[in-house]
Each structure stands twice: as C-alpha cells, then as structure tokens.
Length: 116
Length: 112
Image (cartoon, rainbow over all chains, first blue to last red):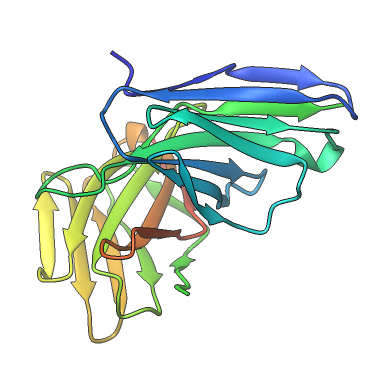
C-alpha cells in the first residue's frame, strides 16, 4: 500500500489555467505538507496542515490555496498558472508524536507540473 | 528560524570509495537530524537519522555523526556503489516545534 499518494504524477498545462494536485496518506498521521522542488532540487516548504488546520504558510502567492477536507487529505489548488510555477510538488506527512525509530516525514512520489 | 547549510552541492566518487556530505545548522532547538535520499523521479526517502542525545549512528555502509557543540552533522557512505547515486538531503528538525528545515541537497554520482 502506498503510504502517501499524490495525483497526478505529471501535469502539463497552459499559462493562466487553474489546476489541482491531490494528496492522500494512509499512515494515520496528523500533519500534512506541500513542498516545492525547483530545477536546482531545493526543497521549499509551502504549507503545513495539522488536523485540517493551517499551521505553516510560507511566502507563497495567493494563487496557491491548500485545502484539507480531513486529516488524511491535503489538496493543492493553483489559480492562474505562471511559467515560474513549473516544478515538482511533493506532498508529505508526519505524526504528532514520534517514537524511537519512527520515520518522522514521509514523502509522496511527487507531481511534476509543467506550465507552457 | 533555522538555517541549514549543506556541502558539497555535487560530489563524484569512484565505486568503492567513501563519500562524505556535511551539514551545519543554526538553531539549538533542533534535536533530530534525518538524511533523505532522492532517486531520479521519486520522492525523498529516509535513509538514516540521529537524535541530539547521540553522537554517531551506523547502519551497514552508511553512518551519521553529530557534533551538537559545533552544530554540524555529516553523512558517511563507505564502499560506494552505483546505486548510491542520488540526491541526498540533510534536515534539522525541532520535534517540539514540529518544524522541518532541509539542506540544499547534494547530487552524488558514483562512477563504476
């Protein structure tokens, strides 16, 4: 079973369009994240939700809006896409309490967004 | 906030040699230091971690060392193999504050 799954894996779209990326985790974790990885491989945190409540909102344009219908899902909606939005977007999740040896942050496989 | 620096950004080694990647952090509240390996087309995967009350941890060919006083930690890979080729990320985490900070990544190439 995939622990953190995100769809779609690839997304090619035109500038100005609106698109969404979905994420689901079956680990029972309480916190979910969206990271953006640019062409230089930098991993930059965008948002974090804990039990459906927004707890981290880094400097991200208002065109990006996360939505968490329940603690197992965190979707990312992007309005008016721009060329600079092209990147790989990773969803991740973590538990509130860590036991020894537990993996504190589990990533999905990524969604590659290409804006033409 | 935390600032995690990672060096080098790229590293090439011959198969069988050792590879070392170093990271420094700034926030003394950070108490957990995982290392992630990202293979092409995949998400980062945890390979080893160390907590602030431990100075060294080893798992087969990989080891991590932590110097809390100097605020730096390192990943050591011995007897490198071509399948070790990937991008490696260090991270400094405050478990209490639930905050994660990643290094800028090291692209490791193992030459057969």
